[in-house]
Length: 477
Ligand SMILES: Cc1cc2nc3c(=O)[nH]c(=O)nc-3n(C[C@H](O)[C@H](O)[C@H](O)COP(=O)(O)O)c2cc1C
Image 1 (spheres, protein in one colour):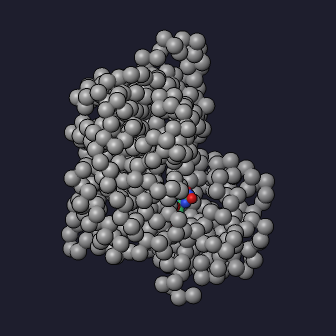
Image 2 (cartoon, helix red, strand yellow):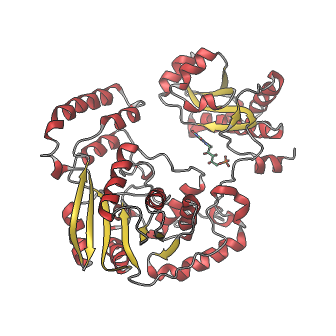
Image 3 (cartoon, helix red, strand yellow):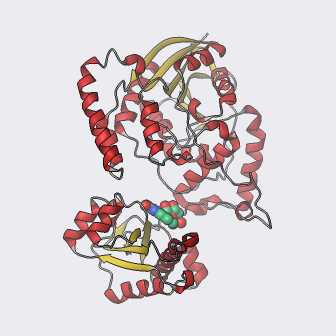
C-alpha cells in the first residue's frame, strides 16, 4: 500500500475480532517498522513489551481497560533519562508508534494508540519495567471486527494549522485557561467543535449526576406526553438534548447554538430533525457563510457518522416567543461573564409569555469549589479539566453564585416558580474511581472526606443551601 493511502486509511479502531490471532511474523513485521523510526541522536530510547500471558493481561486490564479490546497489546516504553532534552525521548517513541500503526494499516491490521493507562506505576510494576523507564502508550493490534471501517473524524482545515513564517495568534490557537472570561465565544465554539471532531461519543455521563438532573427537569417541565415546543440552549455535545428528545418524543425540539457544527452533531445524535436558533442572534449570517465555505471545502458526508460539518444549513427560522419552554442546562457557567445576560435574554425572548425557562447550574456556594481546588493542586488546571460536574460538559467553566443567577433571571423578566437542589453532599461512589491515579495522600484525604460525608448524611436536609447542583424553574412574565 502506498504511504499516502496508509496515512489516510489508518483509523483508530475500537472493535477488533478478538478470536482471530495475529500471526507472529506479521506482529514482528509491525514491531520492526517501529524500530526503523528516526530517534533523537539515534539513541533508540524505546522498548516494546508485548503482553501475551492471559493472567497478566487480565491484571493489566484493571488499569488499562482498552487492552482487552484487541488480541495483541504492545506497551511502548521509553527511557526517562536518556535523550530527555526537548522531550527527545518521547518524540522518538511517538515516531516509533506511528511507524507501527502505518505498517499495521498497510497489512490490513487494525490498530489503536492508547495513552489512558490508569495508574502508570502499577502498569510499570506489572510489566517489570525498571524505574528509569516509563510506559508511554499501549498499541492495540488485531483484525477489525465487521466490514465497516470506523467513521473518519474530521481534521482542522489545512490553512488553519499552517502558519507561514510567524505564528498567527488567534488563528486556531486556543486559550488553555478553564476560566470562560479568558475566552471569546468564537474560541469556545472552536474548542467544542474540535472536541466533537475527535470522534469521542460523549455518551457516558456519570449516572449519579445525570439521572437526578433529568428527573428534576421532567418534574419541572411536566410529563412526556406533552407536544410542546422546547428550546435547548448551547447543548454542546447534545447529551441533554438527546435525553430531552427521549423524555419528550412528541415535542418540537430546537437548539440555540453558536456553531452550526454543534447543531449538526446534536441532530445526528438525537436521530431526528432539530430546529436551529443561532446565538448570538447577530451571528446567524456569519454561521451561514461559514457553513457554505466549509461545505465547499470539505464534503462532510465522506466523514461517516461523526462528521460535524453540516452539508445542509439548518434553517434559523424560529420566531420570538415561539417556544413553550427553554432549558439552559449547565451552560451559563460556560460563557464569558459579559455574555451571560445576553444569552439568557435571547433564550427568554424565544419563550412565550407564561412559558418556562429552566436553568441548571453548579453553585459556587457548595463543596464543589474546595473539591476543585484539590484537583487543581494535582496539576489539572487547564480547560480540559474545567470544573464542570460531568466530563460531557466541555469548554471553560465557572460555577455560579445563586444570588447572581437570580439577578440575571430578574433582569430578563423571569419569575421564580420552583427550585430543586441536588448533591448537598458529594457522592464518593462516583469520585472514588477517578482518584485511582492520584497519590496516596489524596486518596487518604478522599477516604476521610467520604467518612465525614457518611456521618453527615442524616443532616443532608439541613445542608441543602450548600447543594452543588441547582435547577431553577422560572416563568416568563
Ligand atoms: C497520543 C494519543 C493517545 C491516544 N489515546 C487514546 C486512548 O487512550 N483511547 C482511545 O480510545 N483512543 C486514543 N487515541 C486515538 C485518538 O482518539 C484518535 O487518534 C483520534 O480520535 C483521531 O481518530 P483517528 O485516529 O481514527 O484518525 C489516542 C491517540 C493519540 C495520538
